[in-house]
Length: 223
Ligand SMILES: C[S@@+](CC[C@H](N)C(=O)[O-])C[C@H]1O[C@@H](n2cnc3c(N)ncnc32)[C@H](O)[C@@H]1O
Image (spheres, rainbow, N blue to C red):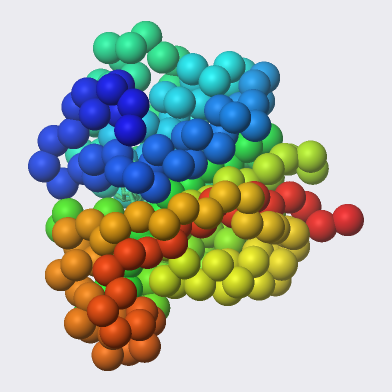
């Protein structure tokens, strides 16, 4: 992970950039996805992806998060780095609709949780995503097409534990065609470790698996 990602202001309750953040950043930079484009970072956390898009030559960057702490952290991280990022608080696309973006990036919560109830105020909101890990992802997939410019691109990162094919299917249901453009196997972090037995019992991982595959999915309007 880059030095700057580690140096981001990240108060308690705000997601500290991890392997998933770094992987999406790398794909975005390598493909030049942000260059000259109007970019939306949904679920921005500390603002890592928004900053990466800004540095990657975006024409404009907007960052959204449900958490006030994340909004403040993003605002501060962008301010001290002189990055022009507009930061909004709210649920997914609600604060920016009906504007359309050329590039939508998201590293949503995707860890299967003990209950279907989503945490409202706890730090777990960064990763808890219902029983199958798809509570936020499915909403993102369903809503992305209406927020995407006609020639725009969506880049999503998540664990294959909650199903890469299911994401492609949900994107297609929402009017987008997607493909997996990057895969990487990484050791479980602390949250996945703590839930490993639960994931085994639900058949979401094999017995003894303590490595997960992260996937980056790219999607565009169909046709
Ligand atoms: C896994 S963290 C990713 C943070 C950052 N994008 C990164 O890659 O480091 C997920 C973020 O999504 C935010 N989030 C969760 N549910 C959301 C929702 N419904 N609308 C907007 N943001 C949400 C959380 O507060 C958290 O900051």
